[in-house]
Image (cartoon, rainbow, N blue to C red):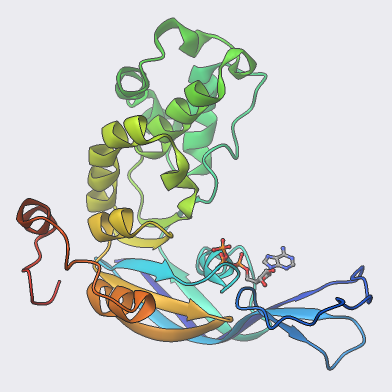
Length: 267
Ligand SMILES: Nc1ncnc2c1ncn2[C@@H]1O[C@H](COP(=O)(O)OP(=O)(O)OP(=O)(O)O)[C@@H](O)[C@H]1O
């Protein structure tokens, strides 16, 4: 059984080369973490006092303004950042997908990239070998899979990256929004694979600004605001509070049925 526990965790980024020149017009920023002023070196307080318990089967969305702390929280949950206060305990293998292109090597072939990226995502060589045909079919890259990646167009790289990421069997899947940034036509094709991937994973945490994707993949949510957890609840409750309106309200009956949601009730 997989789980993630975090207690009283804070993450700071000291900025050693910050410029002290002040803005001509002081603006009260809505975005970003808080900049601490107590020490001589400015410190961005990216996460403050986070306590959180996630378990097998959870499908958690992270929402919040730019700089609210979503990506930092994902990195904390993935064990990439150590908190400066409190602690965290992760049970299970993490598959972190922060940026589709990360970990792809332009000098080696598509096939070799499939193997290496798969290993990085917690799969074995044998497991990845069994996925090659499936990735080739989905990405429609054909003989290009034998070519070095530098010979691919941007879109071809995205196809490969998305094919690899959606082929794995993750225990804990940590997704950052980059995955939603592919072109709409290809995303349509990738949508079912993404849904299947999430079904196969033990636990999902997904940070995104796309309501559609969140509604498709998640059922609960956390609203991050200035490094703190402002609200935790069902996806519908949290999105409604964050957006100031119920995003499920204008969905077609077909879409509501697909999402397993009743028109007026809870998700
Ligand atoms: N490596 C870093 N070094 C310094 N500051 C950082 C670093 N990463 C994040 N921050 C700061 O921490 C705060 C939280 O950033 P984070 O990337 O977690 O926000 P986010 O909610 O994911 O934002 P977005 O929606 O824009 O992706 C911001 O104020 C940001 O400036």
